[in-house]
Length: 57
Image 1 (tube, rainbow, N blue to C red):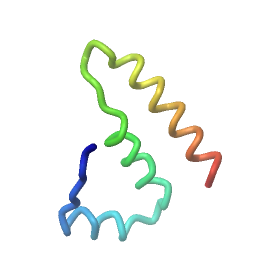
Image 2: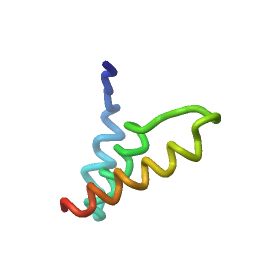
Image 3: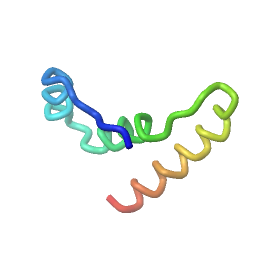
């Protein structure tokens, strides 16, 4: 399991965002990583996750 620590500057930046969906998109990028060999598959999966999260908002 991974742990994520946010810098105070990054948290302040997130808190100040007017687009409240942006942190969801940022989280997806962090949650769905991969390497060059799986890049196309990773991008498609990330798009699926984004669609699922947006439909829940």
